[in-house]
Image (cartoon, rainbow, N blue to C red; front, side, top):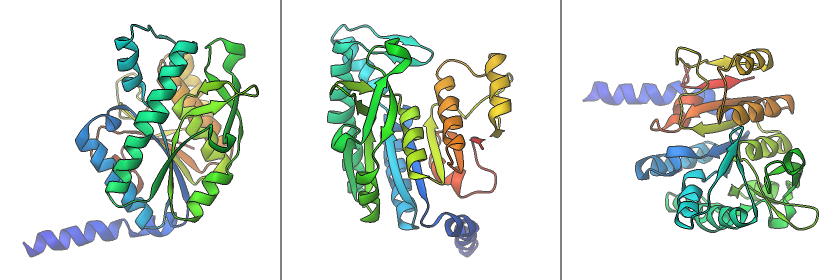
Length: 281
């Protein structure tokens, strides 16, 4: 029994260098996929975030909600079309997207974090005109937006008061219209504006995989370009790696793409020597 306790203490101490390194740094975490829909994983995620906050890391959460949006659209017989991993969003779809993200999912995540002891406030990019956007690719995707400005005053104020901002990826246009923003790209823009130490994307895959299905642990602009060209990186992974590249080119220290289906994946990636996913730097 004593040996087990000693081993536990050694595991905690092995994380000490990382805790010291990351203290007072800002991490932007994109939260989505199965980690957002399975009760056990949801509670594990909330506890991991509380731990990050307790060791002095400033946490910002940007969430998705694709599965829940799909469910509501199906019930209303509204069909979705995807191009290059992005949802084409017409006016009817935009209403459902905003209601689901801002009205339901955002508040669920905020309440769960509060339940586990964190102070969290749920907002969307429309609050205080935090996220301003224009139509992506001249409107090719409908009401899908490309963020052109991040007003980080609200985020800075919340972080200063040790409050976790939980952000729904909705933005406002120059004429007051509402835009759906890809959560990965939204997290990237916010991480860049905050000069975050890290951005972390929780996904339903182990990371960026090679042709044999093995995780590619380290990536950069050159290797990503090659992998996109030969089709190794495709579909929904394209906006993720594009967002990751935009992050590091804007001054974010590193971007991690990890499997949110693994229990405590955040802690395993951040506080162990080996890590579990793909890092873009």
